[in-house]
Length: 232
Image (cartoon, rainbow, N blue to C red; front, side, top):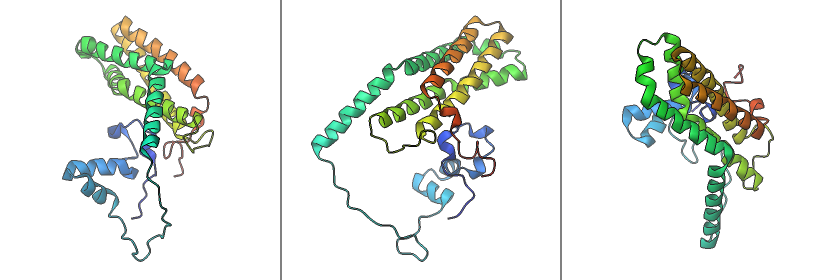
């Protein structure tokens, strides 16, 4: 099924579909919308992107099949142990710890202060609140993905050898975009509400941004499908 959809565009977006200009070209959004209509994931995929072409059908692309040997139990155990060790490394990394701390502090702020600050807020302040709330958990999730990808590559477990166009740079880039706009949002909240806690969150976002830029020096060079390619 031929469409004008952009491949992998949803991998490096902020998942804020309501504000995205590319939803008509996003397969993930199409499946999400179809799933809301029918409630069945298989039916939703077929409705959104079309039914798969039958094997041997006219025009079907012929592909070579390979025999894949099932991993032995000891191999599965080794892989599982490596993944657990990687998870621990990521959880204990300074970037992960700072992102988790920011997420928790943001949630605490919203529970304690959101209703008060919203009362009588103007459009600019309301927008800042929306951004800060949306990004509060998203940033940590994307940074975790970036750190996992980089760790797998360093361990030789990832075949993506492009120094710039790789998944961890793409994940780090969208995290940086969200960190920057969250930093600005918290600054707006702090100034409008004379809120010291919000000012501290803005400062912490700035510090996290610097650490991510140091850890992923090529992230900003990554070309996100659609967003960084006007001609697509």
